[in-house]
Image (cartoon, rainbow, N blue to C red; front, side):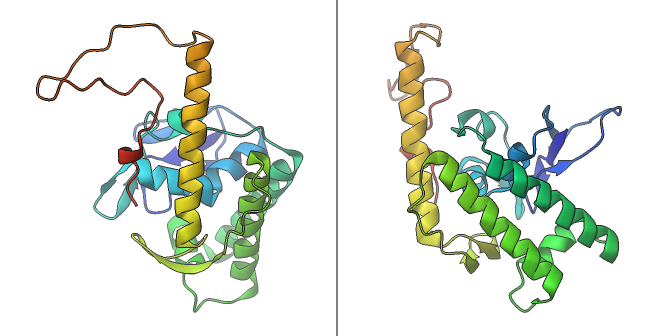
Length: 216
């Protein structure tokens, strides 16, 4: 199954064997499909996670309720399955060959001075993952602008900053569309909203992300 450390620098999922006890702070995704590895390793999911989560020092404090449950997911594709399998294979090969953990491996991926063949291959795979994920959303015409960009988390190999803003806008719009669709089909319990003590504002319905929640 897939797991993700809820507090980490990378915010990336990895495959782990079953038959063991999974402890806090660990997010567990009960799936064996490689397309899920692609989705959760994509820069699109990462942008949403960093925007919707708090941080602990410089690390991402991944909140399943705020991130995963509000993340509007596309239908997984064969392309996502294929590149997810490749990502796992390349990551595993490099980490075993260099005796590296995930954080140290991605320190190399994010360092523009590191240009050896294995690290360049990982960057190519992540680029393919992002385009495969964007295609699954129907965003074929989006130029993601991959490179080593300056972010709030430091220098990162990821999509361009202006594209991250566009991706977050699209994900937020999709979140609202799907929430409205669920309301139309009565998938949310109808409860009388409570007013806050100070402002009298109504709370946001469960699962819906508000624009002011997205911090760039």
